[in-house]
Length: 75
Ligand SMILES: [Zn+2]
View 1 (spheres, helix red, strand yellow):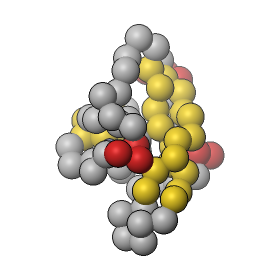
View 2 (view 1 turned 90 degrees about the horizontal axis):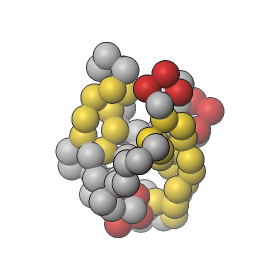
View 3 (view 1 turned 120 degrees about the vertical axis):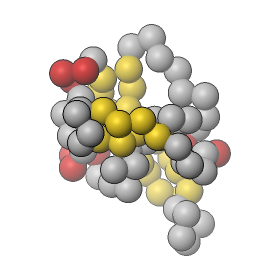
View 4 (view 1 turned 90 degrees about the vertical axis):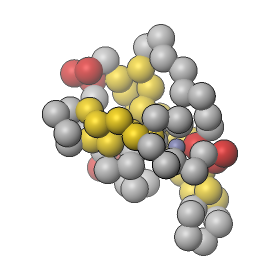
């Protein structure tokens, strides 16, 4: 999982942009910041800090995997 927004792919072509959201590091349990995709008119059902990120959807012709629940980058 990428934690630096400036390393994330450009999603403006599919109508999105990135924000930074607080999350929990799966390994250390510490607080981290993760890139979170925002699409107009779409709400993610979970916040990244409350999500276990077990399922995702592919975007950008299979180059970007976003969590289906919180919208963070799982590529
Ligand atoms: Zn998630």
